[in-house]
Image (tube, rainbow, N blue to C red; front, side):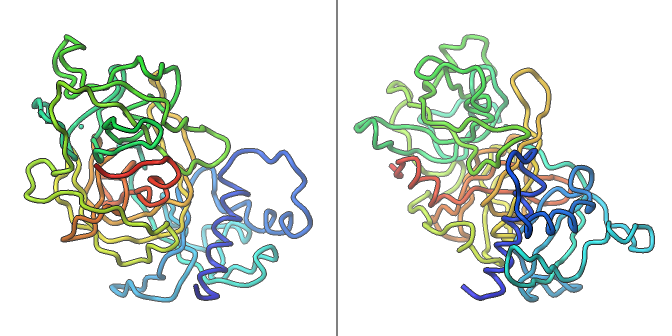
Amino acid sequence: MTTSFVHAAKAVDLLTALHMTGPHKRPMGKQRTTDYRQSRHWGWSSNVVGIGVSRKTAGEDTKGPIAVTIYVRRKFAESRLARQQVIPRELRLPAIGGTVITDLVQLQGTLIGHAPADRIRPLQAGIEAAHEFGDKGTLCAIVRWQQRPGKVFGLGCSHTFARCGIDVNPDADLVEQPQAVADLNKNSVGTLTSNFSTIAFGGPANNFDFAVFEIKDPTGAPSNLIIDQARSIQSVDTRSAEELSSQVETELFGARTQGASGTTLAFHSSWKVGLHKPDGTIGNATFTKVVAYQTDCSEGDSGAPVLEKGKGNLLGMHFAGIQSSRFGLFMPAGPLFTDKGLTLV
């Protein structure tokens, strides 16, 4: 990795820890205190929605130098800001041991966790599915789990399959496809397992938003053939967010958005995402080590497989986006599959 990338990644991690992951409970030390004081007035609670390593853009040029890109709801003229509110064009943060240039990008809309109602049997990647009492989402892939050999499972997002990990009963709660029929047993395609993430709201950063359910035998032999597409998921990309450099071409296959082409933007990044909680409210959760990308997307696409364009290579799982800005976030598939003991069927 280049020195500029290392410094930018350190800056993203530092600013995430200082401003995006809840109150500080430990002394920060002299260097971090200095960094905190010089960056605390940049609008972290009101205007900044994300931060990541990316290429600095200039007009139509999207292949500029490595930068720390700060994504905001609104860009203000510097003349309207107090001196301490202006984000400098170059960051000099003592705690990272170097300097790095910055870029400022405006995202119009709210970043929210992102369902056809036809019954699909057997199950396939890209179809609608959800927890029996949850929001609709998309089935990412058919997988195996090393802790239950011989069984077949479905992979999706925690905020659609496991109610963010709040008030759920593993090995009892049902996962459905679709939710259109009143008879839950008729809708049910499987049972939620204990292999899911519990989303932290207003506190530590989250690396994953995922859930695994065990598929019922009567649904037939599920496959990773993508619904309505003459192609299937054939491999899992092993790259982390850091290794998925910008300008990787993508394709999204969600229940709402089928075959949308896109391009990765920020590949080592942290974001504040609004997710529907079981009580009906929207809670803000910080996610880090995820990839931001330019793509069409819509609510209901959470869990959708993101493939490398033209290939059967699973780059990651889509979990949030802004439809009006053609902007989305996905979790890299490699770390998720490795950490959670999953393999493709």
